[in-house]
Image (cartoon, rainbow, N blue to C red; front, side, top):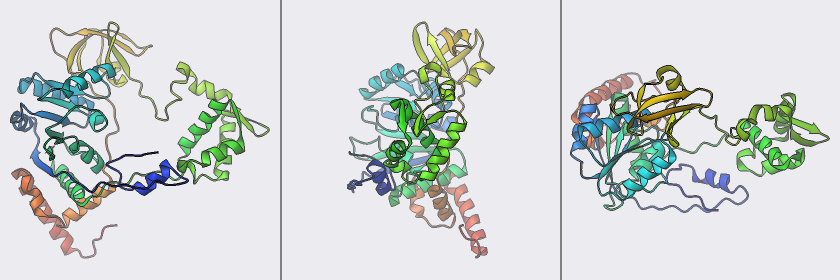
Length: 401
C-alpha cells in the first residue's frame, strides 16, 4: 500500500491509519520550488485592475464559495471581456465540469474560477499563476493551491486578495508556516462512534448476519477503531437493539426493522455515504442535467419565469417539481438573473494558524515578508501590530493559554 500526500503534518500517524500492523516507511522529498507572492486589498475594482495585467496568461482563481465562483466568473468575463474563461464547482453537473477541465487543460491562456474542487487531483495543464480571492482557512489548502502553479517555470506564483485586517494576518501566518515547513496535523478521532455505528450496519448489511465476536474483531483491526473497547462495542449494540436497527439472535446480529425504514429509501442510496446528503434540486434543460441548486434558494426565491445564473450561463425557470426535487429550465435570452446562494458551514481557522497570528502580534516575524504586500496592508496592519505589541508588553502576565 502506498499513500501520497503533500499536505500532511503528522505522516507517522497517517501511516498507522493506512497500515496498522506494520506502519509504512515514510519517504520525504526535501526539494522545494520557490514561492513568489503578491498581496492586495481586494475590492472588485482592484481585483479587476490587477487581473487585467495578466490577460494572456493561464490563471487559476480560487474562491471560498459556489456563489463567489459564479459571481466572479460573470464579473471578470464582463469587465475584462474574456473569451477563454470557465467556472468550476460541485453544483455544476459533472459532465459539464469535465468538459471545462478538458478545454482549459489544452489552452495556453485563459481564466478558470473554482472553489476547492480544483485544489488537487484533476489535470488542467500548466498554470502560470494561482489567484486566491481571500486566503484559505488552512495551510494545507494554501499549499495545494499554490502547488498547481509554475510547473514549467519551477516557481510557484500566487496573488492573494484580502478583504480586511484579520485576513492580512491569516495570509501572513500561512506564508510564515509554509516557509517554516509547518502543516496542520490530520486529526483522527480516537473513538469515532458515529462511523463505528455505520460500519456495524455496513458489515451486517454485507453478510446478512454475523457473530458479535467476529464483527468486533474485524472492526478492531482497523486503526480508526483500535481504541474502541469491548464495553464500547457492547453498549453501542445494546443501544442499536433498543432502537431496532439490529436484531440479536443467540449472538448473531442481523438488521432490524428500523434499518430499512430509516435507510431503505431510494435503494439505500443515503446509507452508502457516511455524510448527510444535501437535498438539492436538480436543474435540467430537456434531458440534460445542468447542475443543482440549494433547496432553500429554490423554495424561497424561484417560481416559473424566474431567472438565475448557473455554470456561468443564464437560465429561465419553466417548471418546479417539488416532489422530485427538479427544476426545468431553458436558456434565458435576456441573459439576466440572480447568482444563487448555497447553504454551507464555511471554514474553521486551525489552531496552528491562530497561534502563528499570536506570534505575529508579538512581533515575532520577518518584516521582509511584507515586502510584496500592498501599502494598505503594510501601514494599517503595522499600526495595529504596534498597538497590540505595546499592549502586550505592558502586561507581562499576558500569556498564551
